[in-house]
Length: 171
Image 1 (cartoon, rainbow, N blue to C red):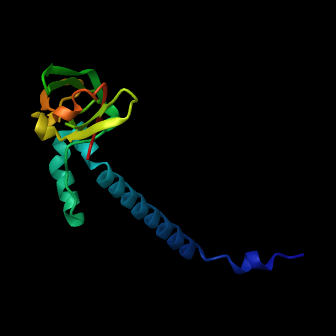
Image 2 (cartoon, rainbow, N blue to C red):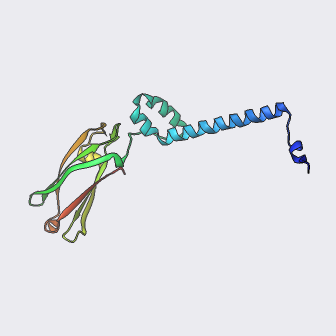
Image 3 (cartoon, rainbow, N blue to C red):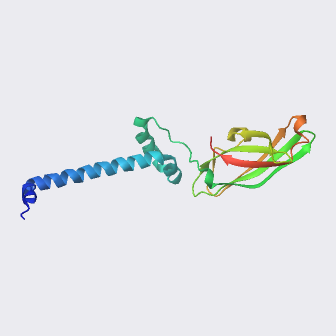
């Protein structure tokens, strides 16, 4: 049995070289497009790790109308030493230390405070944006942001509040 299909599909050497060059060029273009996409998707992390690239990343973002912002990674934010205590009457104080465990600066997060009753049912939930808590724009790598914030609760909630939880997140 002869293999006539193999002989019919052979190309001259110049055509094979052209086809190989075309495929190589296509692979290079696709690789560059992938690199561009990764750079745009991870632009804030790249700029946080290496601030000197920010002008170049901004130029690359212009055609896509994207912005370079501070890096946001809630999983690299730790809340330490949090407390929610009654000061006097209906005045309470929220205190905590927000720690940046990343190797680069992170944007200050928002905090969600949830107050619960004796049955662990939600009594009140409030989100504090970073600006409300006088947060720095960014928290430097490995550093802390101490928080002390006074709250005035409605008198009807005074006897119901038995517990709290505090969560850091980026809106």
